[in-house]
Length: 129
View 1: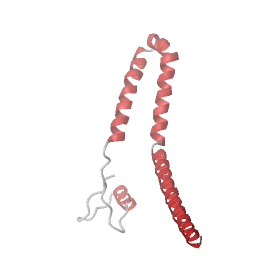
View 2 (view 1 turned 30 degrees about the vertical axis):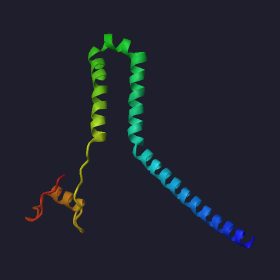
View 3 (view 1 turned 135 degrees about the vertical axis):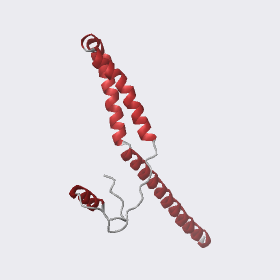
């Protein structure tokens, strides 16, 4: 039974190690999901707002708006799909990358020089303000 007790203790250590790895994996997945939710919060809020505005327009205001202000109604009905298209294109577009600035050079200094109207160094490129 002494041999069996050692095997049981070893199995318990392996079981705890596997449980800890499983908890770490679960925690990592939850952190990734939380990060995705935080990054998508503004976009989700905007889409929900547009959906509610369209629902309100279709259920209550469309029948009143077309006779009173057909231009505004047409602008709204064409503007919503256009804004959704722009949102989709912007959300899925490649943002590109900006090269890192050299140490010691800040954008604030470039902006202040540009606002002051002083000559920039010949070697430095003009700021992209």
